[in-house]
Image 1 (cartoon, rainbow, N blue to C red):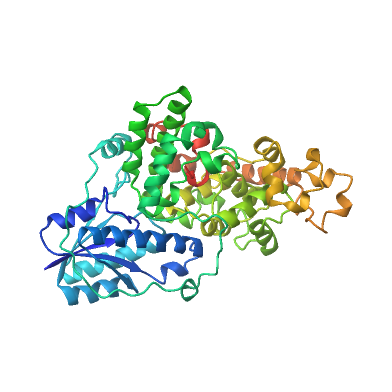
Image 2: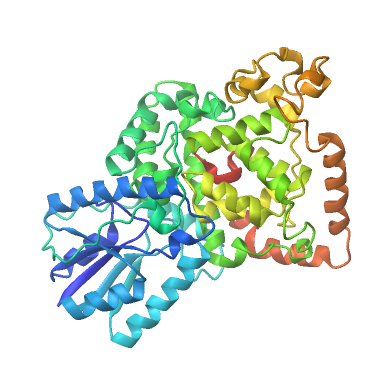
Length: 496
């Protein structure tokens, strides 16, 4: 008899409860990763995600080999792959972590569960974070989450009785329908890179985290940059929580203490939002408050959508943020919120279309964080404050010297600083707009006014308040939420 460990979004060997559970069963262990082509053809997948995955798998393969087990990689549908391995190796126990992924993975896991029951395979899913399955209510969620985070880290198995099996080569991106996606500063994947990032954040980069994370220039260094590693599980949240707690105990200054406290709060909020998707998988495709269905055209204006994605809206700070994101795969939290809000309010684009674009652009795309936050920034939850970011003001506030904007919009080099965020007001605009740089595709003030009126009209509609209370009861009771974090913590993607 053989046990199989199915690696999914947990590509590490340290603090890996599923791997240690399988090793303790006493049977030979087959370590498996399934590359599912259909998953990579979903609208939220991109080449930058795949590149990070491939690096992470290479490190996992090396780490498992050190423990005596090869990593078997198979390409295909999960049920077909698992059945083939069951027949070849007599697998009776399948062990994995509980996955909080997109709707496609949710449906796939249901098919795997049906297969396991039908074939008499004991599929054991173990938690790897503060997210809890089949949670009746959230009255004691925070206490249980904190208890999990305080628990002992699971050590690596000293040795694995690994089972070898035929591995398939990883497909080229084009074979999965992924377009070439060059990045000028791609983040390296893998558990070693994750540990190095955590160490540098807790000992050097993180001192200014609490303040610098709001700005697109300083945030690139001051943020932990661990979120893609959390998304693929090359580092566990528990590892980060406990390492941060140790750093807090020796914090050498008030600045360090405040920044590390903010980081811990954001780690807690991460689990909070992951729990939302676990409890309500349809949040990926349906407005949390049904009154907002149909508010915006379900098929978005293709010209506006493309201009926003390319960074050609004529709103300089928005365009600089989108071009930076396309080139680097990363954007700081406040700017993520702003570009989403501008797309939803000023450009009046449906959140499902723009959310998919951002999902493909973020190297650290995490469905459980992404979709609840996309809806929050689009005003479709019915329970959160409507946030209409003024893109001109954000440019002045977050890029006061204009360095970030000029870096990504070199065509604005001749625009004087006072007009950089509003080049249409510059006397030389006639020689620039729609020649070297587009004129704004919307009037930002007028567009914001129309959006505000439309959203509030929905809120005033009969029956809105009753459903709002029901939504709050299910998702947002303050009593059931994690400890309060600074307001800036509750922003799109919690890039950390």
